[in-house]
Length: 374
Image (cartoon, rainbow, N blue to C red; front, side, top):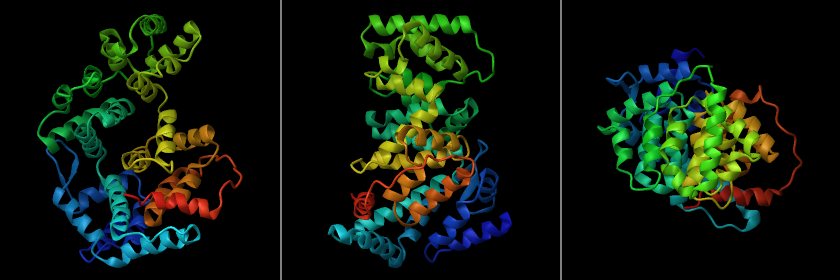
């Protein structure tokens, strides 16, 4: 299919008489950045914002929610699949509420995938601020794993969507991380190749002394450290991390284990693939909370056209199991199919580590059910 035909087919899949999930996922799963941009420009779901990005109409989000839940057959399909897997474990029938949640997960993944990256990051940042301290790590993730231009775009989109600046909102956060968070979301880093190794070595020494001699929580408010982490280029900070280990004989992440905000900041800036792999494995655990589960969608969608290949490889290396296999174990229905279709786009370029079968069908079924719990 040519892209114009794809756009028409997708419009038909959400035509106002319910959602044809199978067709929608088949189309969206194979689209790349330019095709998604073409869709946003040619469909009624998006309009051109004055800050030069295609903005999703809030009323269209409500429309999609209604369409996903319009017909009971979609809900019934999720219930039948999960209950069929669960019978061997004597797990009770899914409630309509649980099945509706499963449909909402599909809808959320599709909406995030089609959004302009600026808008998606702005909405994620707003969600993190609204949820409070337990979600501030998401602000760090966005500020530190995006390029300077991408972060600037998210700041522009935030103003359009919420009629205030993210810097202003972050400055009103009441927590010890406020200074760090404001500086991170306000940053515009140098992204060139030049690194001053003498400066990086000096800053590695400074960082080591600060970690050893001060209350570690106070490091978050240390002006020198905040300045270093928010204005230096990522290549420069990688050099700092390298020199830190050479000088102090320890990995900096070990010394910051009790200060997660700083550890995650440095990891997102210097080794994002390891950070995202940890986020994914946590999201795929059978006893995880809903907020943590949502990270599975977020990582696969936001990194798919960036560094998902490297993240998949790092996940395999760290945990000895292909990411696609873990998704098959815990996700259901078209949500599973959609995520796997996004993984398959980069799978051909990725070498997965072979693994032995380690769980029974019953065990896998038990994991799958947890994705539909309230």
